[in-house]
Image 1 (tube, rainbow, N blue to C red):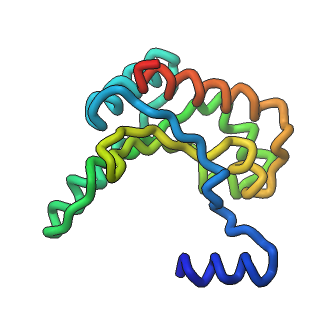
Image 2: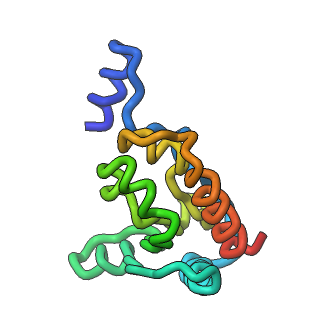
Image 3: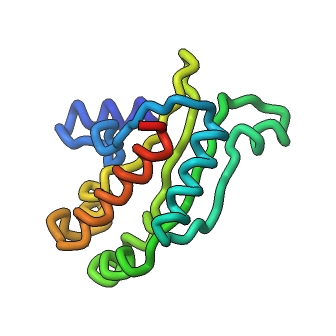
Length: 149
């Protein structure tokens, strides 16, 4: 499917909705588990709610498959997210926020999340709405804390 989307983008000039440029990556200085533990502490310390922590690698092991260390944190602050969903209901598919911590093929650990403006624009919202900068700023601060930066 990815090859088809790339070919379609070349032919039509349209980029896939989830282009690599839509994601922010932050290099971390510890294991996936430690970085994710730090992120949970940072999120809770900022007064946001942690909804779920998903261990993708652990889930893969339960079906006899392997993935590098990889965890997803789903969290949010209804004070910030509710106006975005009110303005663009499809943002409810992307909120609460998600941050992925993963180990790449070289052993480096990264935190990654979708750019907030791009995410909300993809949902039919306004990338320049007054709530975009606070959400983006919070993600930047929280991932920097978790990464050890």
